[in-house]
Image 1 (cartoon, helix red, strand yellow):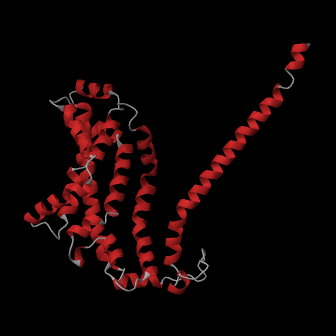
Image 2: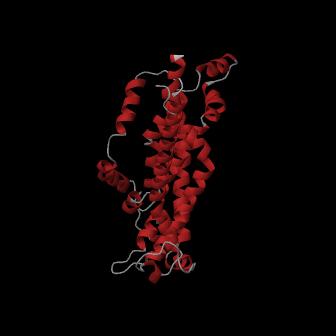
Image 3: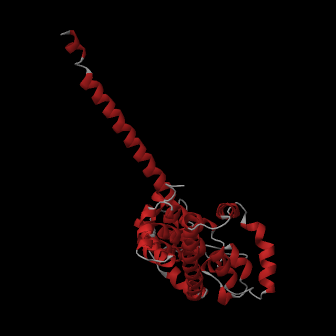
Length: 292
């Protein structure tokens, strides 16, 4: 009887523990939602400002909901600067780098993950070590080299180096290829498949999540790149979208609402790419690096 009496409060203790766990989860999710809203506030302010007039954008106290919605900023954006040409230039550069990096990094990642060749370990360590070198250190040598090649004010300095210096992409693909069972390759080799056939017909289709993650990183980094176009591009006809937005800022005055409209328009391609590849992107980030 005494043991039964002592066991009576157990359900109450279980209920209290469950309540505390629910309270912690509620606080956790509430904090995450608050942080999410805080991170989205600048983006919302950018979009809202692009639909307001100059006077309303600088009104105090600031209005989070525009009193009047206008598309005049987007119309003026198209007349002040040749943003259609800027979009075309950024699209050409970004797609070229994207296709080149996916091809080169996937080949390098497969070679480091599966192929056996001399000095494979030191070579991969060298690739990883190159990620530790700041880009700013190479600027002067690169500029001198590109000037000797007559590449200044062309798209080549913005396309060729990122394709063949994608250390992060090679590392990402190598880590993902390491998670794919080797039995698949062995079965293909028994059937007479060559290394190229295994890479193109087996490994690449299985690596879609990692390719999607690399595609998003590459697209964002190339599309939003400002420093390299600023350094190597001189003429307005070859400017990218980031240089076009910066060019809207004058020496004595700036049309901030037009700049916000241009910035909002420049974000649309990134959102589209992320929405298309979101599922594979999350899967690639989750699975990459499970095997070393």
